[in-house]
Image (cartoon, rainbow, N blue to C red):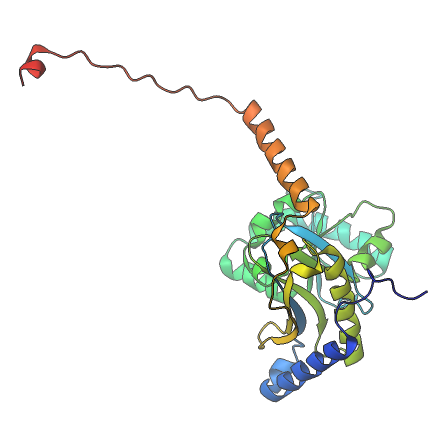
Length: 296
């Protein structure tokens, strides 16, 4: 069976190949040998015509050529098996991964994250030390406040994983095979990590095609809302892959996904206001005038 129109990549393969080859050439000409050894990642930068009303829409994109493997530096934030002893928690989850997957990622229990990574320098060092971060879904709500802004600026915020499932191996390798796209709703640009520069060109192109196909189907207000697509590394210049100068009229209208999101937010606000304690306004008491004040 051939691709349906919905499943087709909206940009031609030849155009993607041309942009990828140009980027790799620029990196080779401008980067030092020491920088090339770090294998910078290749990102897609998606720019929208209109900023959507829906906030923090997260989309997982299955890649034909995964950007992470068991050879990658992987760190997992876990709940505390023991509230006082970090080593007990580390040993427990190392054993879980060793028995289920045959290898041991770096384990950081919540207690260790709280105690050992308080400073700015410690959080920055942690962020730079690993390629991928995962977090136990039972503690995910506590993690963002404890890891600092570096993770979000570098697009390394952890993905949640279910460590209690009996299908942990499948769950784990599913996380390795996807990349994450977040439409924040706070600006018109978003980034997708698609590959590393040491990937074969064909693999980079295939991953970009998979990402753009998902963008076309999951972009709020549709592909028509895509103003431009660029490729770049974290430190390189960006090269255009697609440009749309004119904003279609249909893009001005909110789609059903945004309408539903706004309704849910309004309903949640009403419920919050309903149960919130009412603050009684203080009545202003008028002071009686004295004779002295009347004379003056």
